[in-house]
Image 1 (cartoon, helix red, strand yellow):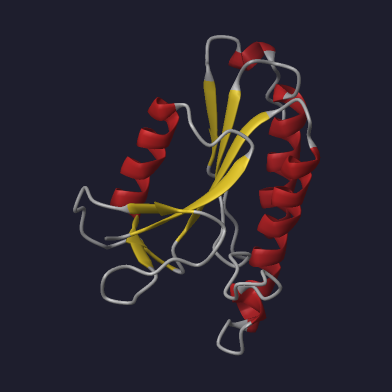
Image 2: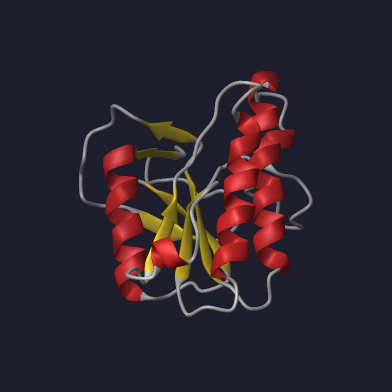
Length: 162
């Protein structure tokens, strides 16, 4: 939280990959996202956020999200809420270049790198096997590809394996 805009002077893109899994550090997800958004607002730098899947929509009316499902673990709800609060904060920033990239529901740390993925929007996307899964390795490839492309400004997108 001590980072300043001067610290980021030599960078065009800042990636926020802050995580948290317990009561003590989950607030860092929202706090760091807000801090970086405030720093980068009114600059030409881009903020790319490694987001969460809990706020992806699961119905065509976009009124029900993954984290509202009966199978969504209660222990993950604070994590999903922190990501959702951060995303709402980004959406309210008029002069910020941001992209929020939600992983698939099964964000597989040990999954195999295939080099293949599918980008989607704000609706929960499934792969060709009907699963919502992406390996960390393939997510990282997608993230770098999004950075290089320069697309998806002021958007939340999602990524799933092919």
